[in-house]
Image (cartoon, rainbow, N blue to C red; front, side):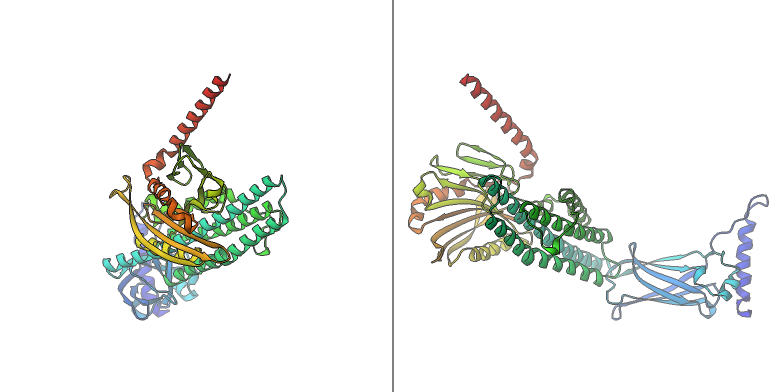
Length: 515
């Protein structure tokens, strides 16, 4: 007990002084003892350890618990015993992770439940409290921290954009499957032919197995590895929201599969079977809200990133206005004109990305030439150069027997763009495959202002007829405009309502004249 004598005297003095501060007619209270201090903190980058030297007035053998925090997240723990003369040492190990540049907090605590009977006796009982110590510590300088934060944001943004692409593609493919089933049911008066039923199911199963499931697992693993590498996390709120997003997407995916299977009147694959299912239409607003929080947490508030998760789905048919030979789309945000009155628009479902087709009214010519408007999303693109390369690769892969004739960057006049022109790419090629025929293609693509989506006018024709209709193809390409100006987006609903009112008025006036 001799070794505790000086501590008992000191603790007793501290308690007595606290009691003397209260008048004799009031209850006497004592606060936590201020008994901990830090003398030095060192960071060993090679071993990824943070070493803390401290001193206290607590008894030899007192157990102290240290926590190394990055924000509110623990990045490491350490346990130490007070040695002679009150010294203690803590060592925080990042283990398989690393301590990256940034601000940290070292917290040292005394807890009665960790102490042995001799220490508790020396302290005067388990009810005695010791004030916790909090010490701020930085790893790296401001420039190091800035570079690290930028790298973290780029990493998390890459994961988010990849998940966005998965979300859109699943939305488009599954939506197209449901829409196709609806069209077939109408065609066959409420029945769905078994061959079509099995075909649609097989196509979606192949897509989800090869595309969604593999890439979703990869994204999940990529995020988990990132978290394991960064001790304590870098952006705790964002990381928690990404965890939430992954769970929501998993539920949404299962829900969509079950909805499609129900529409096809088939059982879903066992791997996605859900006895009760999840409310897909309730999950989608949650997904969008979570994505919005993540983008804001990454410091991104531009409209561009909000658009990155926007879905162009054929389950929602084109809404727009045909006026004369011009069609304006409120759903997909573009405007295009047919070459003349001898051509007509067709909005029949073809695949998830085709928004409309323009055909000659003449049945014979219709077999020889056609024009398609198509939209594709590429959220991984960083600039126009990326989109140019993607267009080249994508075009080469989609056309059987592809033979490139020409390809070039283009700048289409557009007064809504900052420099008055919109970037894009134009490819002319030949598709020559004996089993599918021989035809020539002109692919005229314009890019959305945020360089994440391409809008294409694709002119396809028999090589012998292509030159004959070159002027018509050129007129359609020149008429093509992308309506992604935020001002248009804000007024699109209002404009759509005005068009609807004008149509209603015209129909009413026509009806009165007929009377």
